[in-house]
Image 1 (cartoon, rainbow, N blue to C red):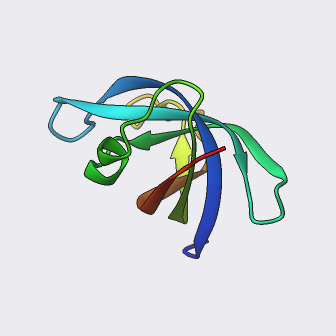
Image 2 (tube, one colour):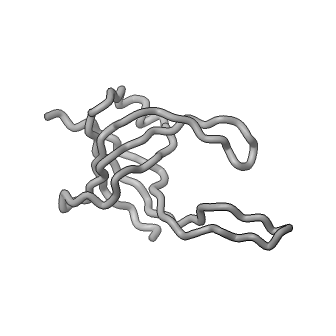
Length: 105
């Protein structure tokens, strides 16, 4: 948690998400087969904000990238304080992708 780690992933596609605070759409990127430094797959997919560094990589489906990011915890699921309903669970995400580098095979 809170550590900066190096990861590798394969670009799958672009997407969008609704900004929870302001309601506008934000661009996202889907990476699959996320690997750590030991070349072990740590998750099957990862959605990231489509930052300027990721845009500069000019990715095409199947391209592999290496990048650094910070591990953060978040709650996902449905919450309604009026009804006392809380179906949220703990999950993890990567924030602030940096030092993005396309891997040439």
